[in-house]
Image (cartoon, rainbow, N blue to C red; front, top):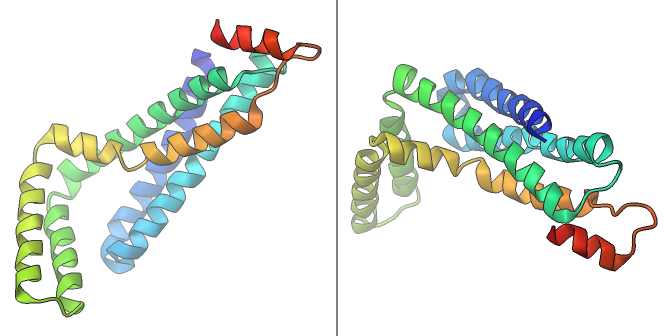
Length: 184
């Protein structure tokens, strides 16, 4: 299982990381809103490797069968490896090449509130919220946790869907035998 997880997890993580590296230099031209759409689209596409990783495990190591639990375990491990690659790439980019990212993002968020015609109190609340966010995000552990939570829920959802689609009991196995095997 380790080889399958590492192979598909690293390829998935490399795809997400490559697209991040390719698009972040243009974030100001693309805009934060479109950048987010591009980013999550890339994350979804990179997590398609979860499906193929589970299928590879089922067909090559599982003898053509896999329980939902085993498929979920393979998929979530691929998701974790891929998400860790994503986090590592972001941390390198953020701390070394984009130390002003939070300021630019904060300005964008505040400008959106102002453009919406919000009251002064709402604008001031957004300004304070962004100041608090900047302080919190400057903590490397919180920065890593926030970054991990960008791709991980997407990978979790794709893992659940893939495990449900790809589960297959061995030919001739009864329902009770499949349940007993799943518990083991």
